[in-house]
Amino acid sequence: MLTFEEGLEKCLRTMPVMSTEEVELDDAVGRYNAESITSDINLPPFDRSAMDGFAVREADIGFPPVTLKVVATVRAGIPPDIEIGPGQAAHIMTGATVPAGADTVVMIEDTSYDEAQKAVEIRKSVSKGKNICLCGEDVRKESIVFKSGDCITQQAVPLLASVGAARLRVFQRPKTAIVTTGSELVSISEKPAAGKIRNSNLHTLTTQLRNLGIEAENLGAVSDDEGKTRETIQKGFGHDVLIISGGVSMGKYDVVADVLTALGAETVFHKVAVKPGKPLLLAVKDGCIIFALPGNPVSVFVSFRMFVRPSLLKMMAARDPRPRFLPARLAATVKMGERMQLLPGTMRVEGEELAAEPVEFHGSGDMAGLGRCDCLIAVPIGKGEIKAGKMVKIYLIES
Image (cartoon, rainbow, N blue to C red; front, side):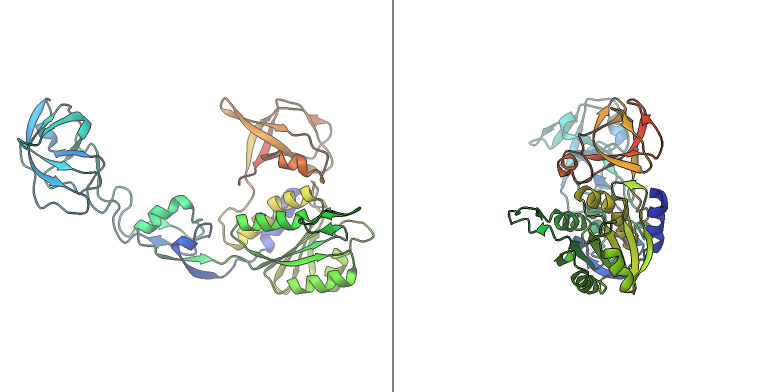
C-alpha cells in the first residue's frame, strides 16, 4: 500500500498538462498563465502625486512656516504645462502629474491656502520626494509582470489591467464528469426512505470542482449493478477527468475496480495508507484520468483535497499544486496508527503560533464532524500517541 506522499507523487506524475486558450481578463481569475506578460508602459506612467496638496520645491520649505505663490492648479488627467520656480507652488490633486520643477508634495493638512491672494502657507517641512510616486518605480516598461505558471488572482487584476493585458493565454480547465454509485442514494431534495441516504457526494464534488472554476457534467447516480455501472462509466471516458465516488472497497457489491479493469482502464494504484480514504483508485483510459474515491462522505472530501485537487491543479499548470501544510501546536492528545490520519480540527492563533484542536469525530461517515472543522490535522504513521503540546502539521481548508 502506498504512503500518502507516494500516492500524491504518482498522481502528479500521471497528470498531463492541458492545452492553452485565450480568454478575457475578466474571465481569467483562477486560471494559470501560459506565457510571460510584459508591461507596455511604466507604472506609474509619470511622476504622480500621492496626496491632495501642493507641489513645491523642497529647497523652498526647509524653514517653515513659509508662504509660496500658487501659480497653477493641477488636476488628474490633465498634464501641467508650467514649471515650478523658486517661491512657487501648484495646488495638486491625488493622481495628477507633478509639474516640472517641483520635487515634493506637501499634503493639504499641513498647509493654509489663501485663495484670494493665490498664496499658500507651508507649515511643515517634508523631505525631498515626499508624497510623489515616481515614474516606473512599481513596474518598468518592457519588464515581466507575470510568468508562465502564475495564478491569475483577484489581487493581480489591477496590475494586469494597467499593463494592458486585455486578453491572456491561459491553460484550459479539464473537461470533467462525475459518477456517484450506491443503491442507497437518493436526491438531496428527496426525503430518504428506510435504508436510503441523500447523495451528498455529488454536491461535495460539484462544489469542490467549482471552487477551481471547473464545471462538471453529472453522469448520474447508479445502483450497485455491474452492468449499469459499466454503461455509465463508459460515458465518462470522453472527458479529461472522470471522478467516481463509491464502489471501490472490498464489499461484495463494490464493482467499480472490476468494471474499470474490464473496460481496459490501466490502474496506476489502488489503496493508500491514509485514513480516511484508503480505497482510493487512480486509473487511465485512452487519455481520460479516472479517480475512484471511497463512498463515505468524509473520505470523498479528504481524498479530493489531498489527491484530486492537486492533480487538477497540475493539469492546469500550477507551479506547486501540492497541498500546503502549516506547523501547529496540538491542543489535545491523538493516537497514531498504521495509516496517516487526517483528522478534522479547528485552528486558532495563540501568540506567534497556530494551535489545532481535533473536533469530536466518529469516522469517515461523520459529516457533522467535518462540518465543524476548518483544518485537517495530519497524524503520521506510528505507534502510541502524540501528546497535547507537540507540533503537528495542519492543512487549512480555505473557502
